Length: 463
Image (cartoon, rainbow, N blue to C red; front, side, top):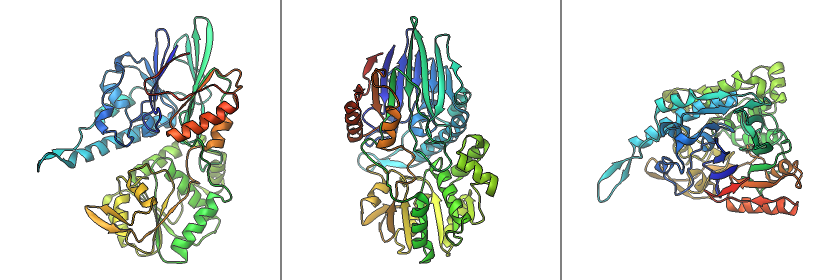
């Protein structure tokens, strides 16, 4: 059995791992690589023949784990795609949205030599490719062992992080010897709004683990509820301002809406108008409602006692572009939740354009912003940013909290991995992390007696 790490090696995006038995090829995740310096078109070609892949397994729906699936299908992949039911629904939404992003980029131009202008990058795939991809989905519920072949079985257990996110555990009979290998995908954290806690992994021989927060620790000493109350009170109650929260439409927005619902339901703050300005967020919220049996016990209990955790009197979901534009004319204090989380596109840019020079505006970041993004420039304190071809002074207050990060931190990762006996676990492969995070997590694990590898892209391991 061979394992090749083809993505998220020494970086965070582009998760893609190839597991090969004697006569069967399994691809675990097929994400878009959008690291700085990587062009969209760099994702078009695979380092293997897509037609030789027998099956794809998805750990969860995020685009850095699923976003290149239609390219794989377009390039010759003929097999099934295995995932949990929520992952199937959320992946379809995200892939359709990716097509819209591709087409939007195509409409833009980039400067060529001299004064000539060239069209933007060609879309990796179109809507009909997404439809073809979705037709391959086979959904598997948590804790149900699914026989891929007579010799290979798959079990999903909850990973937290996102609705439907799974740790994929493969049991393989190789010449009479049973080998087990687990792929964590992205691991969530405990007590996250809406989501269940990640489960401990049963004993395996090999573990491929994410390391996003290796060596980093989430904020302690306050709760998400208290932090939001503090910021909203300062931004919208004490002063008649507005709070703009860039948030990814799928996952982060649903967690934030539930947290706000609890705050206002308890009367911790006077009512403040909340706009969720993202059509994709509305569609994703419907998926959360559809799979409500899989949300956290706290979320289900709130629903039983108070009603829909994604609805409250002061909340409005904004669909039409015209309605979105009208928010600028709303002069009462308000909270605006809009995508994208790193400010690199979407309706959030419209709200920034109208408010970045507003002294009574606060911009609250609740997620990671990669280097080079507009969000990162604001967080590092740039006094001027460029929007709509204009240089604008930054007068709005910039704040950040990691209390809504969907990733487990260093302690969470260590707890998950340390559930494995170091004398029985043959090897831990660390992926999906920047070099510093990978190194710090590897060092901590080696001190505990684990055998650790940090694979390079394309590196092959005999298991």
